[in-house]
Amino acid sequence: MSHRFSTVQAAVDAIKAGKVIIVVDAEDRENEGDFVAAAEKTTPEVVNFMITQGRGLLCAACLPDVCERLELTPLVENNNAPLRTAFTTPIDHINAKTGITAKERSETIMSMVDENSTVDDFVRPGHVYPLLAKEGGVLRRAGHTEASVDLARMAGLTPASSLCEILNEEGDRASRDELLDIAEKYDLEIISIEQLISHRRVNEKLVERGAEAKLPTSFGDFDIIVYDVKYETQEPVAIAMGDLSSVEAPLVRLHSSCFTGDLINSLRCDCGDQLKMALQKISEEGVGALIYLPQEGRGIGLKAKIRAYALQDQGLDTVEANHALGFKSDMRDYGVGIQILKDLGLSKIRLLTNNPKKTDAFIYGGFDLEVVDQVPIHPEPNEHNQKYLDTKRDKMGHQLP
Image 1 (spheres, helix red, strand yellow):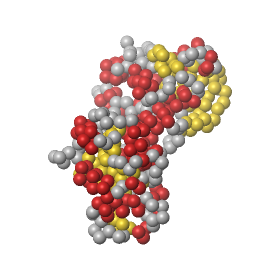
Image 2 (spheres, rainbow, N blue to C red):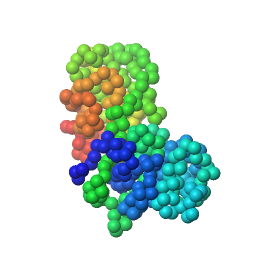
Image 3 (cartoon, rainbow, N blue to C red):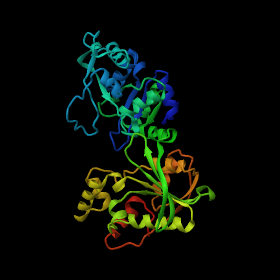
Image 4 (tube, rainbow, N blue to C red):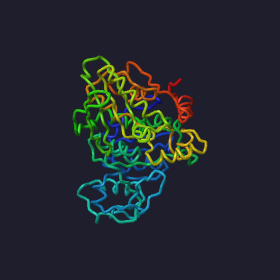
């Protein structure tokens, strides 16, 4: 195995074979690597390797049904940990003397995921920390807890895992380079949570048509389709005109919702103008689609966006305001939008955008969808949005004049 990241399939195969792998999260999140193994294959040897080479806290991730069966409750009522890691009651198997040995912790983890075990098979508090994973896995929360459960499920095993953070010899978080060295030294597969998210967004159908109707507008006659998204409450919308299969690469816009710009013609941004211009361009060609994605304020939500506006009133630009509130400059994800385009039967598109990152989403997502042209969409600036547009151009790489 060479000194680089593995494929998701290679990691799944290793989990299935009872091996330990390394899972890395985003560099702007914890920037941490964890050893991960399937819970039902967590032998004493696996435990010993994880705790001696990982040096972190050995945990066991599981879904709500396990927590209900074993009466595992949240460790605290108000979880204010930065990433809301869902620790529950620590336990030991009833046969354990102290519960701390590799053999005892292995027995605790393997019994915990045995569907015949009951609350009486364990004592509490103990030395194994069960973590409650969210249903839907990394598509709902991009954490090691969910990633490890996803990997076990994808391997055809009980959706539960053991995991342990990896520290270096100085006791700090192991860096990316150190994690790659460890993977090479012990011949382990290593993947990132981003890879796992992309893999699932490509390989699992997450969108379904919920409702469809005709929609006459001032721009012409469209069809409107509202989608349901698995594991999420959002309802994205496709507004399509004409026979999308009649041209090789129809015009497409992925438009993120903007209450202030789209609905009440705010002059602080160019969103409403871009929405109207996109519909106008599609109308002129007689064929195309606009996908309306509910990810307000570049993904931070309406309330946070208005807080960012207040900071901009004090002199910050849009990127600085997002950072001041603890957000990345752009939190949007286009995986759901791309799945909708696939559902509409598209394989080649001309993308209406000034944002090259949207084009990148198609390249790096692994989708069978090709952007053959990036079509600019430049509304006239005004005195209220000129600084905003300059920031998008200078700091976010948007192709604007």
